Image (tube, rainbow, N blue to C red; front, top):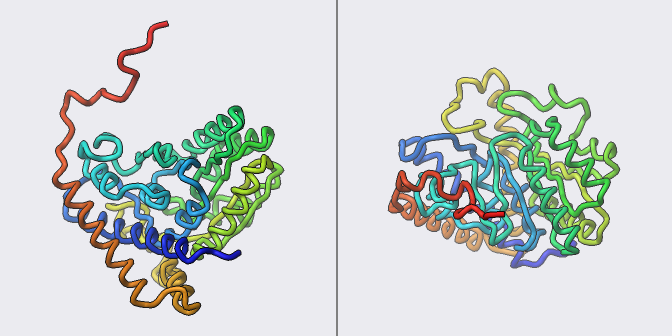
Length: 329
């Protein structure tokens, strides 16, 4: 598949944006500038970026607890994302959602949830709406290997297949559900093998290769828009950091060792894309470095934006929880 140079550079930019955003989050969280959970997406950038590059702004996505990479990959604003992590009013959810609940309906980000598998039915609901109205947009649900065993996912895949809904189920298999190995909890070799049980295509993709992720998702998107129903894509990837900030390295030796992490770091998704671009003459080393530097600067501006945004007023606690005024029958 021929991929436009501008799209390749956009994917590189968004991958660097995610990487530098997450590095900054780790820095400021360690410094105590904000508290609460945050789950780094470092090492998995190619999955979300490649997949979202195959979508339009009008297409929908839902995410999960490892939630910063998905909205950034879809074109979300890093200043609003950072402000949300800081709990400030200029954040995506006015400072009341935090790290695991970023949403931007204007570009199809329906939101994320820390409850495993819970956002998958939301994506299926959006696809059902498209089907009923005759719209051509598609919906994509991100979930991890841990959520692949949740009943909500299997119910969603079954329903989507029966009604041939335009939805893509995208498993980010990063090998571990917190500290539990994927190999110890899934009865098949690959999550994508489960697609056959629901009469849909299953695709196993190198999740460190953003181009491979783009091509696989583009094929699934075309299938969905043509009315041929859902697809299950498994991006085989790896998280370089711990499950969440604050977990530390205490448990690492109990479930994975340094040699395994080092081996996966040899396949850093950013290195893979940059080597492809430079070796094929699509971009120079200097151009790649400039894109990295631009995203570093943008993340710094986003952090200053978050620090300078006010906290929400206590009286705003219950705003946005229900319609106001409540519609009368």
